[in-house]
Each structure stands twice: as structure tokens, then as C-alpha cells.
Length: 82
Image 1 (spheres, rainbow, N blue to C red):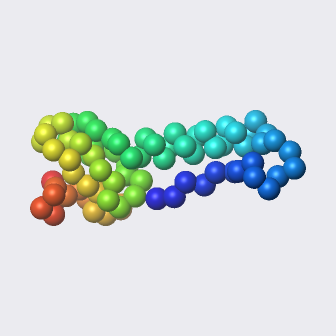
Image 2: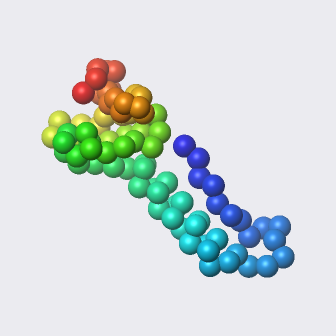
């Protein structure tokens, strides 16, 4: 997963409000993708952003990780599909 931001360095003028807004949205999306949690049903309706993305499954009581994106497949620490 990558985070692309428009930087101030090397520019002769401040960032526009549109650039600031775009940066903020990108940062929010990046942070939201890093730490998701919820029930198994909520996880089934969620679209993971990257392979390896963690999800704390409150139904199971432990963290699972995304193995594949399309379709989304989640595995436990032993690699078992859950």
C-alpha cells in the first residue's frame, strides 16, 4: 500500500486548498485501511485495500489478514481461511 501526497518542498507557492483536501483524504484512507475491526459479517462486506491488511474479527476474537483481494480471502495466523 502506498500513500501519495503533494508536498510543499520544491514549490514556489503554498499548497492550494484542493491539494490540502486531497492530501487529507489520502491520509484518512491510508489510516483507516491500517486498523479495521468488526464482526465476521462486517468483514465479509468490507473491501480490503491491500494484501496482508489486518482485521480484528470480534466474532472470532482474533486478528485475521487479507490473503487475496478479489475475491477477498482472509486467513488466521496459521494460514487457515476463515
